[in-house]
Length: 389
Image (tube, rainbow, N blue to C red; front, top):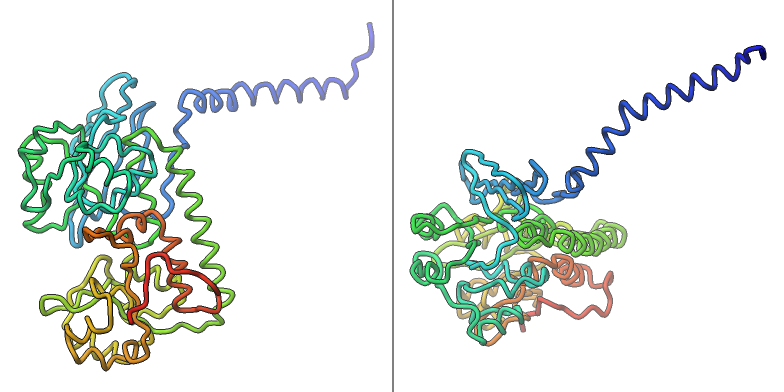
């Protein structure tokens, strides 16, 4: 009988310990990974207004928060893959079987997200689709495949009911013009979105993931979004490096109905102006969405602003003078540094800035960087913006 080798014994004990660790700890984890392959597959990076949580294989819980300024609650949806077993019921959540087969949308800001996911063929009704700038939506309307269902208080409940859509995507303001209460009363399945309340332009673009969940095209959405993030971040880094700390002052929007609606300091507009290297004069307001302000207040604060952007429907400096001759005294007007985001408006008035611009804030940022810091992007041709002459 051979003498026992102490070193060999130690090695065998080590192998045994490693086998126990693998069997007790690692194998169950591996089993969980393969049983729930999508458990780590969803992510929300920039959006503050929706979350995604896989609560069982093939069943995802999506919560929409902050649907309008001052909202005291949100909306919850349980998205159940048609192959999933069992029913998951949760109080306050509406169950939607996915992928959906048809939809109605009540905001043109969703068009580009739907188009990028290749899901326009599911669109059977929309608000004012004759104004659409997105080619696939316009083509569907002209072919009679997408019906005009009205909007706000004029939404055609009976028209939508006859279409029998699986889902209606809409927005809400918390006011009397909201369409979702009457649609829900009619027994229709309504999904309320909150992309316009996002604080970051990339958070707004990230709603492509939200829509993708209803079409079972999440991987495509993630890939598209990653490219936008990469492009956006490249531009912000370029501004940080090349702007040399110079930040021209800027005001936005125009007077309307006796008030001047200004983007809140926590809005995606304020954020993209900051990322473009500008000093937005109302950045100190602590809210998202728009704030109605006194015209005199905005006029006084913006009198010496270097730039004026996003001027509504105006297409020339003459439009400014016709609206209010006093505005011609603003420094930005005198020095012809007024830019509007209406370069891509079609004959029906549909503005692509509010369609493809939702998905491509990097393109908007590129325009703004070239406006505020022309030396950084020499030779850039404006995509969404044009200078008022």
